[in-house]
Length: 447
Image (cartoon, rainbow, N blue to C red; front, top):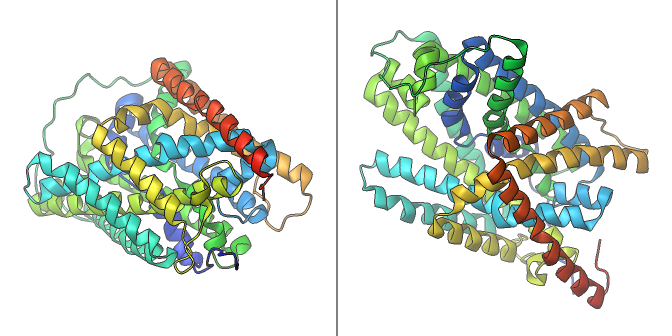
């Protein structure tokens, strides 16, 4: 029987759009207010986003070399497996399947659905059915082929970039027509008065900043579906991260110009408030539609890329056997996509996705730091490599230090959530032992 393989159909443009679409979700429309609150000055607000951009670019360099060294479906799972063994790799896939990807799907789907319900003047109760529709429709599109899923994502990504471009243009080129919407500031802004206070404030601000920058690593999971992945993937990663970095900095300049520091810190919807200042109610409506497009595009990218990780785990005999299969016609991991969608819908219907996401936000950076460390191992083991991470080893060490910085900040800000997140990861250990025994009984199927 002929083995079904992934179809290499995506070029550099689609790869770049996967990176951009996998990063830009709802974070840039919500997080800037939190950052302004935590640092207390406009220069430090922009500095926090600049630091986030530097970390993201360094991460892009790391994942570009890893993708060139291991151009296999599964991305981070493959790198951790080949460097440190199947156990840490399984924990990554376990966290992704249980919460990190599926919880993000539920949360982002609800965010987009709530904005759409508000835009269409529907009752708040309409949000959940709309969110369910988003997950189901996008899962089906990704089942029907990677090109269909990627093309849908490309269109939505271009639309979200167009909406952001209009926001930036309005703030930098137009004259304000309306007063800044008044909002009650919960507490007065306090600028750091010492170096120690500034370091602490920046640490707290970098958590939402780096959360908003997260997602570039997911494109590595579809490496086998890129044309000439050893060349295409590194280019897509660097181009995509640079586009996002420039976009985020320009958006924050636009927010500060339109709302001022106090207005930004107090705003619950800085993008909508910015557009209102320059274009009135029409601008607010337009950017709300842009936010819907952005969240739906991000959702589609998460659905497409995360399923490849579960398929790689199953191919190693460490997950349900059916999830290793690719459809003979569509060449997509249908069972992995369906299972992922079911878990996301269960989290959505239970209403627990937001709380669960808080538990394991820090887990993302555990795996980011571990994956960067994996590059040292793979470099020592495989001397050859056509792509080399720039600024090695300093850049990789800085990226790993940033991961530790975020972890410490997450634990300090909410130790209870960090402990619960660690507990959810620990629960993966007995599950791993079960699958490891099953694999041993049926023979080692590790590729």
